[in-house]
Length: 102
Image 1 (cartoon, rainbow, N blue to C red):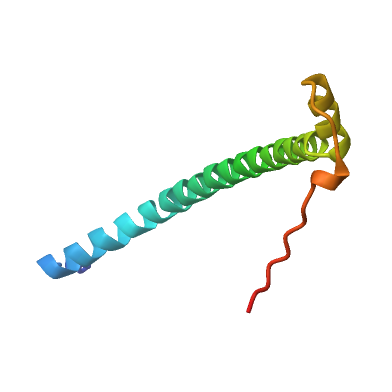
Image 2 (image 1 turned 180 degrees about the vertical axis):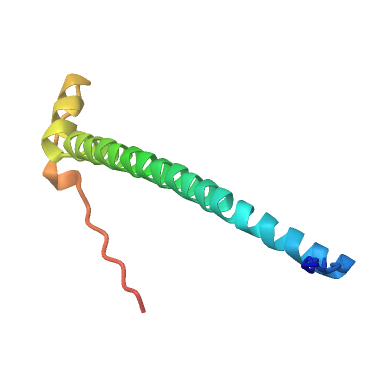
């Protein structure tokens, strides 16, 4: 009679089952977490680029406003406004104040 080979089944302990479960979970969770983190990073980069564009636009607006202020504060513009209000420019009435910083 031929002997049949019987397979001995190894019994796994609860701790070994827990370790295998954790390993399978990590193998499945790793790609998902990588995709999620890359998607989040892409979203943040997009928001940063939008903010940079807004900053550039605001800087251009500020520069334009600054130029307008300089134009309105020029001596010729002040003289024009003064004359339109009936005032005259008299250089003798202007006094220069010098301040010492001691």
